[in-house]
Picture (cartoon, rainbow, N blue to C red):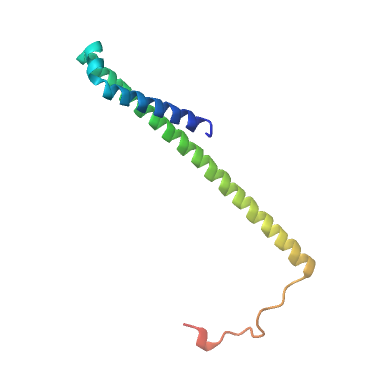
Length: 111
């Protein structure tokens, strides 16, 4: 994806520059090709640009979905490794002492 997007950016830039050139010299192009061919040319030109933009959007979404899936998998693996490390630590040191000395709930803390 890293090599695909710059390639499309170059194509978009070339399309934009050629469109600007055509807009500034519209009268000479219309005289050269005729009025009917110019409308058809610009219609196909816009269609090609739209298709390229949609392809880029689709490929970028596919790439992002793959990155998210890989990130979620790595997060799960990280969590599993942390759990194993914690289990090893607890089994090596023994059970931890309770935080408080009382085991009964106080009546004033119940809601």
